[in-house]
Picture 1 (cartoon, one colour):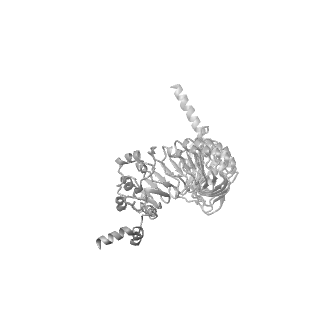
Picture 2: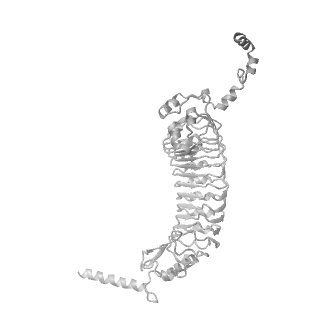
Picture 3: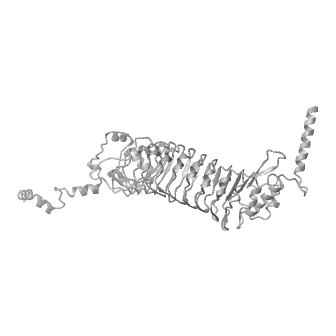
Length: 480
């Protein structure tokens, strides 16, 4: 009992000391250090259109909280509350951001801040990022300034001094200039999103030093130059989106070393071929989107071996060659876009046996031959199957009459009595199908053109009289 009493007395003494520390000169209990509390008031006053915010939230960590502010109790005595998160965004409607919103230098008075996010706040009043502002926030882990059209200027290189930063998102602003090379010093950064800005210049090679990076999004800027081969060093990278820039040259073969990559988007650039065979190393790739690049090359056979692939888009890439025989099971492939290229040859009928395929666009190529896709596949996809703009394709009369969709328009093959292939006969067809397609599979207009040059072909009676006078003389004498 004596020891218990001694413990209770000690606890009460400690509590009284802590309580006394929380008494301000005005007599009310303080839950934060005065300097940090006043710093928070300055930051909120610079952002929000509410001059009474400080009066309405004198104890923002406890009795008068605000949804955009979060706090944690310090680990060392006297156990003050510390602001660890400030979030301003459209999910918090009141109060709104002021028209002249800005980021106060008092942010530096919040040394325990871990998250600072401002969304859709800087709309009309121009604002830039101060080089001196973020360098001293040693605890900051998450910095997100997104959808702020009035946020302009350059990305300060001092951001690289944020030694604890794991997420940096500056997307959908009006930032300009180069990506600073110092960004490679952010070795613990996991997510970098600079998309939808006006950034220019080359992608710095130093980006390959960011060994913990899992998400890299530089899309929708005006970046130029070649893709750095150092991207192959990012062994933890899962998403790489550099689409909609002005990148030139070839895809670096080293990119195939990024084994954990799930999404690769290089669309809408000026990249050229050949496409590296090393992409076969992307064992976990699910989304390959490289449309609208002047590759003018063939798709490497190795790309069709990516078994986890769900979406592949090579639209408008000047692709040459023929479609592969889809003997390798791409059981997860759901969308395949190869439209607006220069692909030739027939459509492999076993493409219709891919179990997950739900969208197939082969329009505007130079494909030819009879369409021998399974009827069940054609009807299931409907308007998600597009073969328009291939003048060499034709279909059976029965399939043509069904009018499956406006995207499945092709003339009837001349003298074709072929029924649409069922799933049961599809396997037999591939075992016995020869490289030289029989005459009946040629499009009607091509066969007509070929036969029109044959010496025995005559379009009218005068032609026949000229070639066979003796035959017609005998015919007339016998019957007339």
